[in-house]
Length: 304
Ligand SMILES: Cc1ncc(COP(=O)(O)O)c(C=O)c1O
Image 1 (cartoon, rainbow, N blue to C red):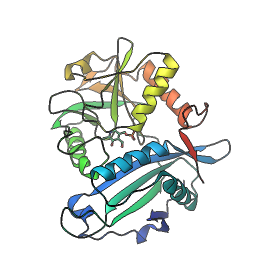
Image 2: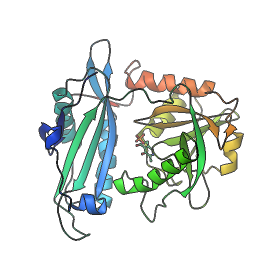
Image 3: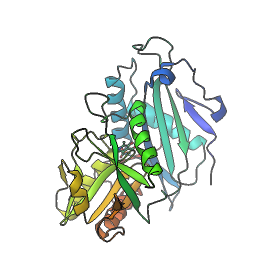
Image 4: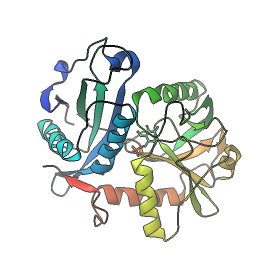
């Protein structure tokens, strides 16, 4: 397995040990960071790499930077070139997970808007722990952040305080993970992934108005599913008690990919094992990201 040695810092490739940030920067003091987790998948047949939905990840980052009023813009082409150099510099031989963090490196008052810097780090990722067995989730007593307080729609580091409290509570209570509810009591998402459930043959996911991150994987699953099965994914508000009616459930995200959910609040989901449709969605997703099927929507970006 390869070890990542090189980091991208504002376009320059530097050693891990040289990536530094000032303790008084706004990023450290006020969590003024917006970030992305994206992947470059390796095709085993020829060892080539391609970013999955790079454009959508950078566009979400751009909106995050805009909402946070950063005084800099980052362009998709610029990132395609820079992240390609980062991947090559690390000589990977497996899929690559990339963390791209854009932050205010300046020191000053809370409303300071710059200077803005970025780091990107490439890492190997083992297969997520629960991909085969599935997860046991508990509904958290922490509420999901609301859109008008700290919008979960953008991937701001500050939002992960809420996610972390939720995950820590779930673990303390003996669960593998958690589901968060909106302040109105509707199902939102997991701390680092979006939620889908199957009920009476329909695939259902909380709507974008349910205080969720605008997830790239969620969107990919919706489009792939609708094309493959010829039926819509139902995007709507989901009540907590509906969770107990689900025959299947799963979480999704760039890092997690697709993780079956086999129990919620110590009640089995369906028969308590990963469901059949969940397995089909997993296979459909991997066929897409690994480029085993034609790239209908232009989701794959080669390294430059
Ligand atoms: C809170 C949250 N929801 C959903 C997701 C999934 O988003 P994406 O599919 O864009 O990776 C993530 C992933 O990082 C997340 O942190």
